[in-house]
Image (tube, rainbow, N blue to C red):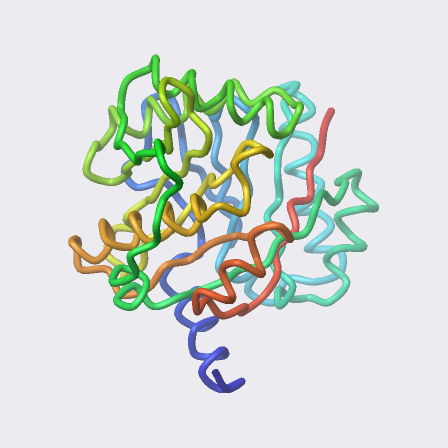
Length: 265
């Protein structure tokens, strides 16, 4: 993969995926605009700030835009995530966010891969493990129990969030679990991004004792086949440092990095 091809993939990411607005918008979620910034409210885990470009805002104008978000979420008593990509301008945006009280969390790598070869892969699952598509609240709660064991953190917002997405349009998202007997050992979901050539992959957490056995790769291939069936050509992932090497070996290309900057009143 040449730098030119990686640049073309990043341009497709910027033009087709950003700003990252849910489509359809789940019940209880609202989308507002403040200049070039898109503000999404009503998520159970706080607000979300996204944009394609800040349209050249800099200096005092940019500080004022950031300050308006801080004041709004201070009044609401909610946290908010500003999704910052490494190639966003101006270059001093991270410093301005920190000065306003936003705190950077773990950086992830934005990876893009071609659907067709990923969909054609046939990974071998460990004996006794099966993949299954799920929609029920009971299964979503089982996913959260697995996620909380992996991350040792509250992930309960996923139940309501995924449930609302499925209710808004069951054709826009598919949730897949990997089960060993009655236990969920891994899970991931795929969103089919409307009016784009992309699907995006989420989740992928796997219980420690089930890692390095091909389950994550099998989940990627399964979701790639679902994306292929819907005519999508590319898969996009915001990957942790654990997932990034696996995805690169599968043919995904890093195009930028992304860091959540979170303001908490």
